[in-house]
Amino acid sequence: MTTGEPERVDRSSRTSSDYGPLCSLVYQLDKPVGTSSGDVEFYRDLLAGTSGEILEPAVGTGRILIPLLQAGFRVRGFDPSPAMLTICRDNCAAHGLDPVLFEADLVTFQEPAAFAAVVIPTGSFALVTGRERAAQALRNLRESLRPGGRLIVDVEPLEQSTSPGPLRHWWLGDEMLTLSSLPPAQPEEGVVSSWLRYERWRDGRLVETELQNFSLQRYDLDGFAALLREAGFTAVTVHADYQAGLSPTPDSHVWTFVATA
Ligand SMILES: C[S@@+](CC[C@H](N)C(=O)[O-])C[C@H]1O[C@@H](n2cnc3c(N)ncnc32)[C@H](O)[C@@H]1O
Image (cartoon, rainbow, N blue to C red; front, top):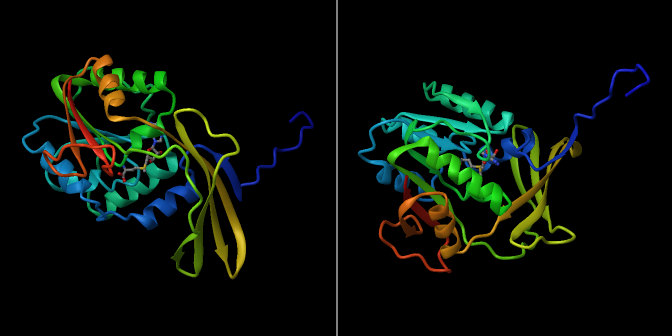
């Protein structure tokens, strides 16, 4: 702006690849703390016996962090989304918890030899798109683990294209939040993308919108194991569908990789 007038920002609509305020609120309504697809119990069991601090990057609303803290683990969390961190802090406070939570990104965060374990459930690692950025994130995580520390990370087998699903909605008091998705004009090689449109309705009127460019990096089993080894991890094992020892297949819903630094 060069006119000397204050810049006008339309705060009722937003376009970003981030988890913005509406998107974060919908995540909280859709998967409140206490929601588990088997991931909470599986991660808790895999971490049994871990002594030392645990890191959860992409902590989101604290859906995993809070039950881990309640189980007695020492866990720190980070996330690049201020909106997610605000909800996470509120959720922690509601459970009488006050963990260290901070703003950071998987591609740049590093704290040498600080952690006994790093956990990334829910397929969140795929939000780091681009093979080199993903490789950098894994090298950072290996550096951040103590020797012998473990990275436990989910990868969801993904289809190349996403088709738009039905409109979803949630009620918050007398307001309705909606989520719809649109496929991108030009799919990128190796990345599954869609546009997610979040809306807030009051008295039948649209009062807020947010558009998220939602992109996920695709991996196959061998490709992700190779990426882990290239980043310096050893002893890579994989479990399918949150069942210890269940062998992964391309038809699994989720693969959980356990890799040693
Ligand atoms: C699906 S939520 C998962 C939240 C939580 N871990 C859970 O299981 O409920 C994904 C989170 O990843 C975060 N995220 C996206 N890109 C990231 C990045 N580059 N580094 C760290 N976190 C990221 C988002 O802000 C969001 O909070």
